[in-house]
Length: 311
Image 1 (tube, rainbow, N blue to C red):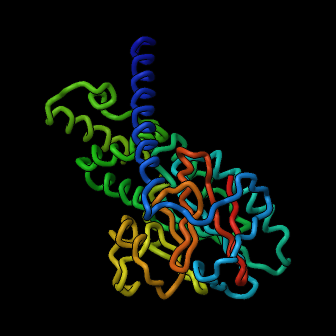
Image 2: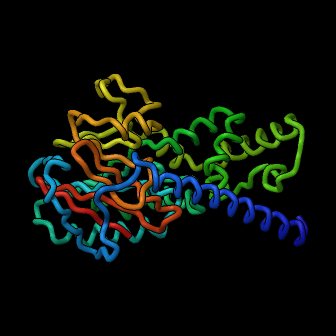
Image 3: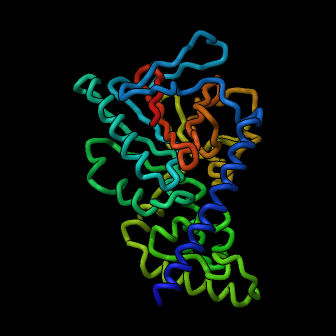
């Protein structure tokens, strides 16, 4: 590839990335005015390394749960390829945990969506499976974006769909560019584009590290501890947890968000971005749109105390 063609490819990739980020920003802006997504309780803008207690003045709006004695749980929202924010948040969690009693078991629960949209998706997974988190017990949940990657691994034709909501950034982090026709916005026949995706698919399958593929394949659907159920997107109302579909656990929004009645457990989830953390008598939403806002958030659960940490 000549220097000029490399420059053209780089500019094309950058332009494509900017277009997707603008679409994401528009979608995020719409979510801010949605009644289902508008938060009632936020993270202080000056959040420090020590978690801040939330206000529980309006007890009718919040349900207080507990976790087992001598266990502190930190639940981390959607990362979306923002390694910089993940490293910063883990540093804050580690500093906060140092103030806990010495015999406390510290558990990190990641709510999924480690990849896509952000340009450091591969590097996020490298960090998560490294020894950096060895001091903690870890639970990694499946997000809809990880499900999309696994679907692409099995089906090259899913690439175009995955690309529409952030897969291109993940492929880029693994050393691949999207099909030239798509990156340049040029017209091509379906057969040519399908062949381009098939070629990319074959290369990606050959090169993805075994440790990464194992990580994606072993992600859990949900996790229960104490009075809390941790899941990526939410639950379908009225359906027992053992009968919930993976589609609902990973993708549900309006039906779950607008459901007025409490669930058996307090649901701690990500998936639906909002300006600030949401907390009421049914659920705690921890997706603060890190990839577009620069704010990655976590909930801290210790005894019956709930606090928040944010970048």
